[in-house]
Picture (cartoon, rainbow, N blue to C red):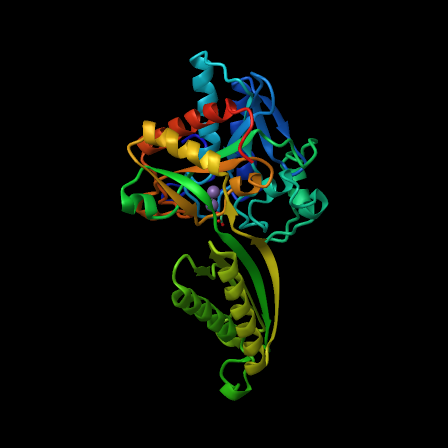
Length: 398
Ligand code: HGY
Ligand code: MN
Ligand code: MN
């Protein structure tokens, strides 16, 4: 709740877009709690903060998530995973239980990706999926540059990326969808993350007078943008299954009532659990866009903002999440994640998985996002037991 008061917005949510002053204030608060727990705190070149309880020996078991939010975010998305990690360390310290391995808690930079694309930027750089030079030069939707903003808020750390590979990584997160609530299950043993395709589409037409220009003479980017948005919805309806398509952002220029726009810039968020189907959807969209540019005599250019293939988590870690949940939670179900998460990046470098708790009415990326306190506690307890079990495994199945 103290963290949620930073960047608090109407409706009980948070606005802490990555690398803004609000994000910085949230980081300062959580880093303070890390120091209070006596953790060794490092900040790396992309601003990831890792707090480690240096007990036991060998490489740490790691948990964590993000505390940046979308502009109309909730209290729990990301924040739960970071604070649960700190809560677990505090609980173990109080219970004088000393784990056999160090435990690290990560705050990963710009997981949301809504100010700076791609999403999961910090964990992607941490695992060596993107060079730091490229990441620092990313320009956001407001024209700001990642490197400049990191410096401005004082989180341009010195620790190099890629960071150390943890012994294992498990992230606790709200489901952000309706599955757990609908099936009346408390814990999700997450099997993987669906593929994500983000594109920006720029449509250049010809601005003209709304009253005098005959319809046959128009080169109208807002009409083309609308056609693309409708095409995406129809494609998702045609494909069914896990296929989802979203047009979340459309900027029209000059955006005036009596001017046929000169330009429209829009984003396409297309996802599927199956890479082959996702590729098929992307191909259909590309073909539709090029046919539109012919028929509407507009110039259309596209660029990828993010493209991550579906990720499958480590079977042995998923088994542990499920086994621990069977003995400590009322119910558990295996399920894929519709949202992207930092854990999907750690799956590239160590055995990784996730624990989900329910989102009331499946609502997220919305100030009304809510998870019952008893479910937050249950998820944190499951994470505690899972981290201890993982720390006691010498070598994972390959
Ligand atoms: O977009 C996502 O899936 C995540 O919230 N970054
Ligand atoms: Mn999240
Ligand atoms: Mn999110």
